[in-house]
Length: 109
Image: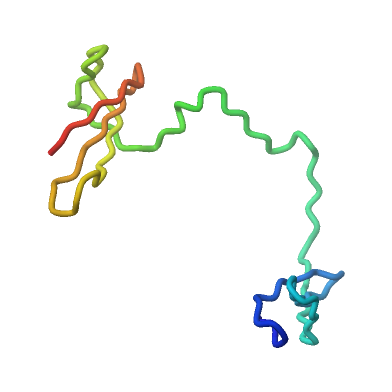
């Protein structure tokens, strides 16, 4: 909603089971009220659902090129990204990251 006084974007404010809208710039409050139905309240313990990641390197979700050989350690297999690093009429660049030592190198196509 847009504030009719000053033209700023109005923000929602939840009050019990109703949502009203107010303007952060001039303080105007809308007369339109929307009812909200809360389906259920979820009670959670503090330690429930906590995920601890001990090795962030395992989070890499890039495709792996099994034929790429690392020039540093000789490992076969590297994560690969294809990025347009130069102008649009130039071919893209492949950026490899070794799956073992994390060495990064580029290959211009």
